[in-house]
Amino acid sequence: MNFLEKKICEEGIVLAPTVLKVDSFINHQIDPLFMQQIGCEIAKRYKAERITKILTIESSGIAPAVFAGLELDVPVVFARKKKSLTLTDGLITSKVYSFTKQEENEISIANKFLSAGERVLIIDDFLAHGEAALGLAELVNKAGALISGFGIVIEKSFQDGRQKLVDKGYRVESIARISEMNANGITFLKSEVTSL
Amino acid sequence: MNFLEKKICEEGIVLAPTVLKVDSFINHQIDPLFMQQIGCEIAKRYKAERITKILTIESSGIAPAVFAGLELDVPVVFARKKKSLTLTDGLITSKVYSFTKQEENEISIANKFLSAGERVLIIDDFLAHGEAALGLAELVNKAGALISGFGIVIEKSFQDGRQKLVDKGYRVESIARISEMNANGITFLKSEVTSL
Image (cartoon, rainbow over all chains, first blue to last red; front, side, top):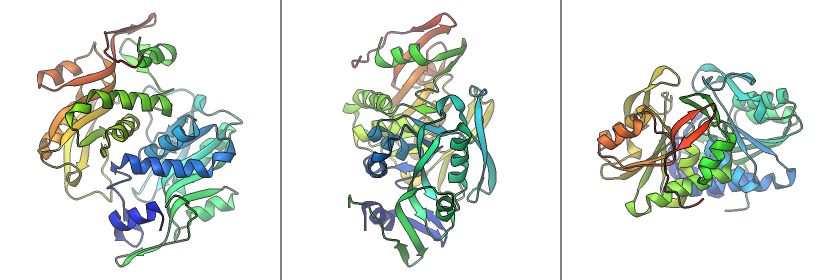
């Protein structure tokens, strides 16, 4: 098992066959050193891609994205789920349905922070049905920038998000790929992480 | 001027005498290396305080908090503004009115991530009227933990947030303290940042 799979087994809580709680180290409490390791692993996989910008979405994508951004030495932009009063003009938007929260959000970024021709790495904490990932991809496409790929912390490989992205020709790198989970345990697909 | 004041003067946009837009490097696009410098500066000021946990609030507090957390080698917990479907039991909550967004939010953390006796550093990107800061302080108090102080990126010193915190006996450290701002420029209060 790689470092993330090990942590998921130790601290993750399977609430249902599709619901994994990792709030002790990823999406509520954050272990900074561990998150840096995740960011570095994502950065390593895209080192050759001459990334110019990282795009993520608030809130749980921010921590892995800033550590990957530090490693690749590129700015991070986080899409917002709600409109800000001080960010009104020049927005690029897309709609994202959240299965977890059972609601549709309009996500947005200021167009001045994503230019045509940029090479974008999209980072998020989870990939499940791919709704957030596709929404972020739409933002990049609307800006005329290039999607170099996705860097995902935990992929629920038993759901169809990865396939949707692969079908569109996108590269997807996930640090942990869960093929099955239930009260008895969590099974992972083979991973290529080198830092164990 | 310190490194942050300089960046504010170069990239900040004064939209009104009370509204400063710093979305190019703090709360929409993030400059990771610069944010690490901010996190390290906050950490340095609290190095002697034997901090055991950093508390912040989504979304813009997360980046400075994780870098400070990395430096101090402590976990970061970010309070949520909305309830999560997978975070339902054992919540500590408080109410926060946002002048910027003109709405009241209930913010919350899972009580298992903040224990009685912990020494907590509260980090946020802005301090203005102090509503978010007081809401976060209430969470810490309800948990029976100790507030070691606040680490703020940008303080609007012409508003009363700092005074409210100081009146309650809290230590407040802000990397940039703005005494006045308008179309002609931004004036800062004296700052003690050593890394220029």
